[in-house]
Image (cartoon, rainbow, N blue to C red; front, side, top):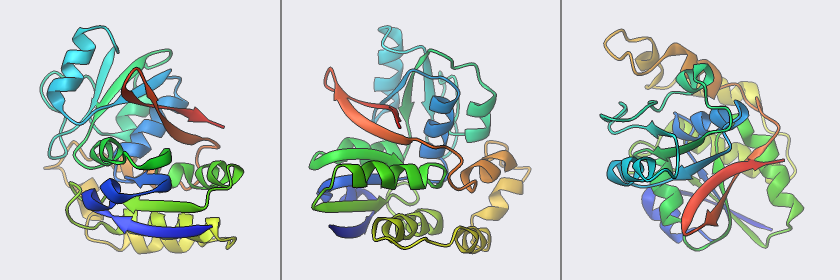
Length: 228
């Protein structure tokens, strides 16, 4: 199996084979948390307007996500794994829009199989990919707003590549490098209350969940569900 690492919006658009769109801080960590908390599924969209319209049409009960890091007006939940861990979502359909992760999902039209990736589902995602024996896997680190690279997403991609190629990876090393990076102070900045310290704790809890987040097309929409 050929394993390729790519980045940002262009990487998602050109990704082929089994594709993992990676957004550690914070979209697909929040997705995994919501599914683990009992959400039935998550409908992934590219715009705030689409998310709100789908909720109004009864497609889902909650809108989750962000614009420039903060929950847009009318959304029920922000892009916070910690907030998702405290929310009542059991049995609900959530509609998710973010500036990087969900944009990558919508763009990844060439994927044979598609996953929403983060560190909390790393090993389970690799296990799911390997079960289907693809000829190629593409790991796309979405970065900040999908336009600049981010340490946590690039390191997650490297970790997934190592696991796919039979190496054990180094979870403590990944955590240490990310924690030394430029974004960490934001999670402890009182002027940025949308970035909860609990978000950081959850996002760096590698293999917190024993499931992959698989994206499938349902009624013309990208839908995330648990795949064990």
